Length: 96
Image (cartoon, rainbow, N blue to C red; front, side, top):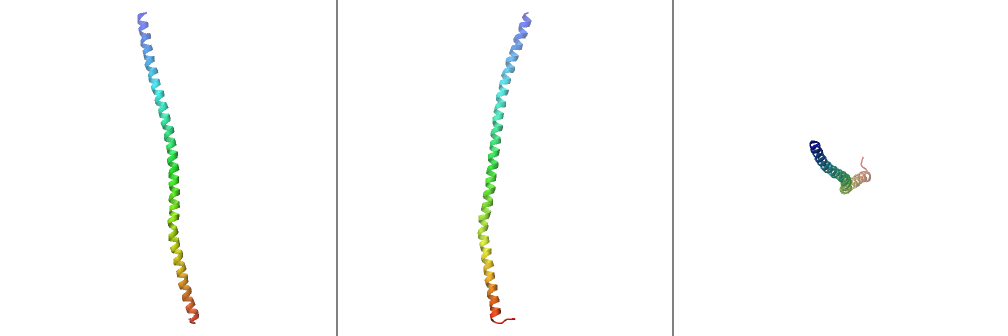
């Protein structure tokens, strides 16, 4: 009978140990789950920021292209005026 009591005592201690380990594992799983949710939120926020940055880059490219377009327009107008002036000279002088 004493041997049976010793075995029961050992089994009870093993069960307590198992319960402590299980509690620790549950807390770890909960912590890991919270970390996973936080990482997911951070990932979504980073993607939003990347989208915003891409939008800003596109807007900046549009803004930077305005002066280039103006210069192109000025050159086109100047070339048109010069060609028009030369054409006018040819017509008024009785060229060809």
